[in-house]
Length: 187
Image 1 (cartoon, rainbow, N blue to C red):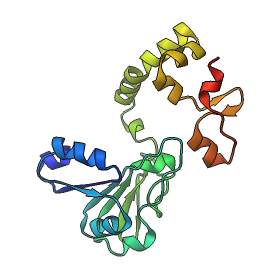
Image 2: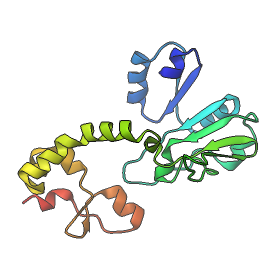
Image 3: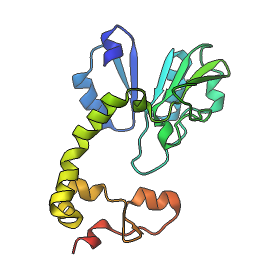
Image 4: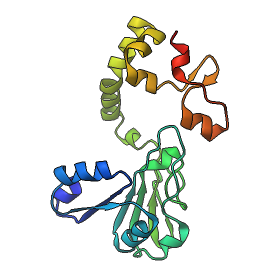
C-alpha cells in the first residue's frame, strides 16, 4: 500500500480469492490483484523491478515459487526480497543473508534474504512483538496453559507440542512425525 501510495504500479498475487476480494476493496487503483499460479508468477517477474516473496504456510517450509530459470527472464539489476527466508525462502536461488552483508547477485538479479528482518530495528520490533504477545502470556501465566488454551481458541491453535507429542499438523508433516490432536491435552 505504501509503494502504491508513492505512485508505483504494484501487483499482488495470492491463492485466496477471498483475500483478493478484500484487497480490491482496500487497495488504491494502481494495485493490480492476480490469482497466483505458475503462469502468472512467471509473467509478473519478467517486468518487475522489485519482487517481494511473502509466502507463509504456518508451521511449514515455504514453497519455491520463483525458480532459477525465472531469473533469466528478469531485468538485469532488478531486486528480489524474500520475506519468507525464515521459513526456507520462496525463491530457489535465495539463501539467508545478514544485516551486515544483505545482498548478493545471481544471474544479474540482486537477492536480499536477511533472516529476521525485524532485527534491523530491534527496539521497534521488540515493542511491537511485546504488544502483540503480552496478552497471551498473561493468560498463560494467570490461568495455566491448559485452562488458557481451553478459554482461548487462538492459543489452542498455536500449540505445537505437548508432553513430547507434536500437536500442529504442518510441523508433524514437515518432520515426518505423528500428529496428535491438541484438544486431547485439555481434559
